[in-house]
Image 1 (cartoon, rainbow, N blue to C red):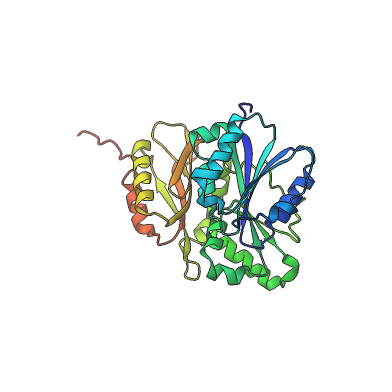
Image 2 (image 1 turned 30 degrees about the vertical axis):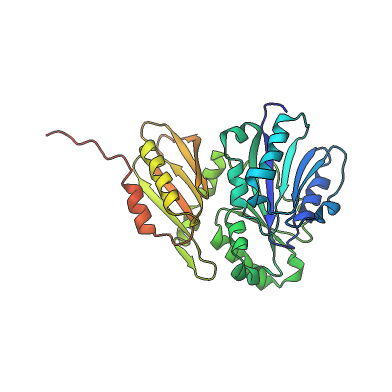
Length: 331
């Protein structure tokens, strides 16, 4: 395996949303790309494997009899390690999770230092079954987590719903995850939609997703009791001290297990001329270098939290406490 990290796209979505069909559409639309595909089925017999389009150069690995997100330290970890140490040639890794999978565990799998040497998470795509979404949203927490943690939401089976219901679905999706790009499809046909090579975890794309502050402010804070996921956005004036901010994030995530689904932010740090991009899924956060601050650009930090039981005032107060205080002027 060469030293260039291979891009990875995770395909998630609840049962029957059309994940395997989308997987096949991607393969067929990219005939010159050699895919390595990890296919997961919760049952002992992987029926979906039989429906994956066969093409020269593509390789399919099966994980059966367990949810992929529940076996990270065993089957999936062993498989990824085998891929790393082998001489398998491929261009792109596609992972199709089970309908009940929590993609947060998968995302975190690709955030480790060793893993990032060999794999580069490109994006998370979630299929949304428009014919059953509104019902399942209130019945299954997995649906809400899949939406909150995805970068691209494909609203599928749009031919089965009326336009007013489709608008309501899009509104719900934007409320749960204001970062995600929403696309509409029929029969998982996404050949005109860019799904691969989006580089959605790059710092510049994190910054871009925060640029529309008007949109974020209009939904901050949002409390939807039906799905208990809310979004809050916070703007902090002044420069952070990066060590204190990192320590605060560690404590904050440790103290809120399961409550924080996602954090995105652009951070201004003392003595650093470029912006820092903050990205967090679950209890794992990363801070990476972004673009330089423009000469006349106001240096402020913008952070958006997606989760449950969020106290905006308390979070804002605690964040403000780790901002560098102005030096006192001796009289």
